[in-house]
Image (tube, rainbow, N blue to C red; front, top):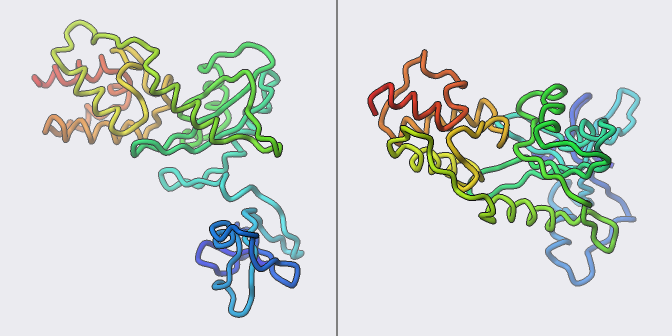
Amino acid sequence: MYALKEDSTPIGLNEVGELYLGGTQVMECYWNDPVLSGGKLKRDILPGKLLYKTGDLVTITEDGDYVFIDRADNMINKYGNRIYLSEIENTLLELPSVKEALCLFIKEREAADIVAFVTLNENLSRQQLRDVVKSKLPEYMIPNHFMILDAIPYLSNGKVDRNKLQKSYLDEIGDGNRKPQPPSAGGNGHFDRITGIIGSISTVEQCELDGQVNLAETFGFDSMMLLRLIMEIEKEYEILFKPEEVDLENFLTIDRITALLEGRGR
């Protein structure tokens, strides 16, 4: 067994790496599946050895024991932070009201969102779920979206149907079921420009927005997303906000952004 970093070097104590298996028990290939064979069976990591890439993340104790941490496809990097999606799932599962929880990292239109899919034992709103997670996890780990389902879909082999979950999320954010809301009074044409910016840096559709929707509470915009929004607004309007204006509270709703821009005479 080998626990290797991304650069194929062995991990040290308290480090995390992916588990590879070698030896006579490792098969030469998957039958009639060269793509899977190439992804799972590695001949170029250790000279003369055929290794099986398990997809399991492990660490090694001082006693030489291998300790399972998570699946590799459940580990993501967001804003330079390493996140284990199972940690978010376990936080949700601690709630008596939550029956099942599964998180996916979904990339769409240059945006990348953590989406939490849950089934419930009793009624909870998305905002209540968000509030609980916010009280237990750092800001960068809070899902951008929560989806409450009647049931988690499974394949015939018993594994979660992740493609179906992703499709249900993309259908929701793009289905147009929400009617577009006009900008609040005094918008002066800012609404379309601001919603266009929001759409360019996230998966949020214009039809999901109105002047008073809170971007953090409703769509999971964290401080990094809000700072990116500020920079994109500066580029769009060819301005530079003053330090005292760069208060994230000023950018939580379109109405607040509009008021700030109008105060500058834009």
